Length: 344
Ligand SMILES: [Zn+2]
Ligand SMILES: [Zn+2]
Image 1 (cartoon, protein in one colour):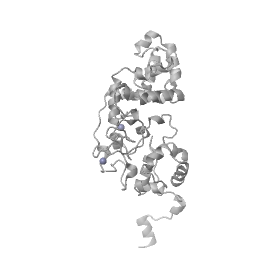
Image 2 (cartoon, rainbow, N blue to C red):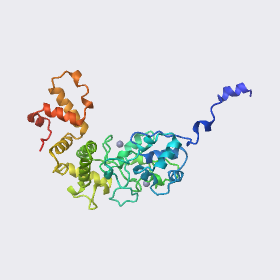
Image 3 (cartoon, rainbow, N blue to C red):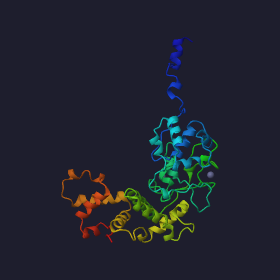
Image 4 (cartoon, rainbow, N blue to C red):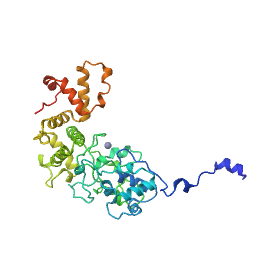
């Protein structure tokens, strides 16, 4: 075969040396996905480079059993620097995948992977989310005790493999197998049966999550108050003799939210200042922050006299701005018309 014929058959061309392009970086890079945990990204990174997650701990110089979940809560500077160097990702981008500095840190599920049947595990998942993912991955929001259902699919989360009942232990996976397969028995977690959750419980869960999110931006006092009340929620419905919400399995927390949804919500507002109590009641009544904003926007659209062109920025307004505008426009009678509880 002549040189010209070889070039035609194999399209050979001289490119940069691989080492000049990749340097000392790992051969395969993996893009972080929306809301992905750093542990999930590291598992995918390890597998993409042909290394089992359990062995990848040694690559990072780590020896603890739950090595990757520990990085979710605290990423040592030298590990962050090493990852930055090996992947070309910015340190800030890697740190943003952790839960360190998270305002609601007391609501994180505790790190334990060998839990009693009714106790929490460190990680939850939605089988339908995993099934819809091009590259199945684990979300930061699934680490939170106040989350027990998937807002996208309307089903309950799971915290164990339905086949062997083991918690999620990808950090201990000794084979080069994707993380949506159970590390103990190999069950495909995407095939886990859908868990039903009452609509009232999902609505309450969303409202509580929104209250926590809104108040985490208003100061540490408000944050600690709502966190302590949510943690003690099982006591209001006599669930769980072991204490706080973060100790309960996902199934028990779903039951807890269902019972709470059927009761008065005073446990979340009593003894609070009028403004905080009123804000919480309105978010609870609307079923969430976005729903509340939508109600206000709709209300203002019907009652304001300003031209529509001047109201285009309304959906981007902050909650305080919208509340102020609403209270200015609305009288008590209209307040009742919206179905929103009165301030105490
Ligand atoms: Zn889902
Ligand atoms: Zn299993």
